[in-house]
Length: 112
Length: 114
Image (cartoon, rainbow over all chains, first blue to last red; front, top):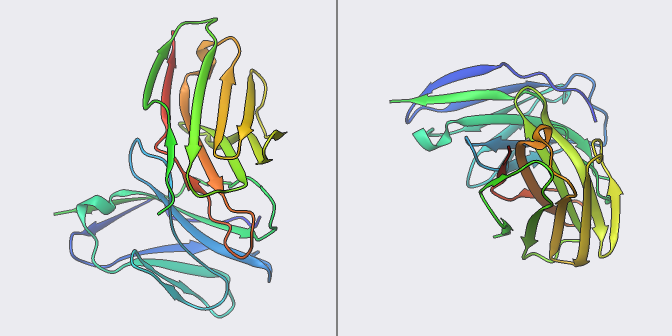
């Protein structure tokens, strides 16, 4: 799986959009970008994933640059409950069981 | 919604005890995983299973064993607990089929070995 780079921490005011960047300059053509988050003392939670096109679901939007070397996770209206560590992961879909490799992620602090 | 449950949120055991951590998923997923998470070390894979009665070692299997007698249940066993096995243990499950390869995690079990 390609290496990813994320800022260690970010702050966001409640109600504002949180934009979390991720660099994955060595991504290959068949690797997907995944985002998970982990709220303190809980298991990681899947947020969204994409290959080339931008994606949106009820939790977030994922913007992938045209060259696919970076992406941004957008939480459109951050709330205090979005305070968590956010992990960007790049992986190939193999169809078989394989581990997820979490880096250090970005610690997002949403404040009043 | 996928649901992955773990038998305990918090567990305190003594050195040398045999410890069972249970994980159950309700989505008929073929693949199940056991990770441990420690500060500064991230998630590390202990064992995984891609089918009933099948298991594969992960990165740190020493001191652990697993059991998968039924598709929905994956158990992690610490044969003789040691203090260095104090950790947060996370179970996950994943469907085999493409393109979705999302892993769904349980809430975690925080184990303290005294």
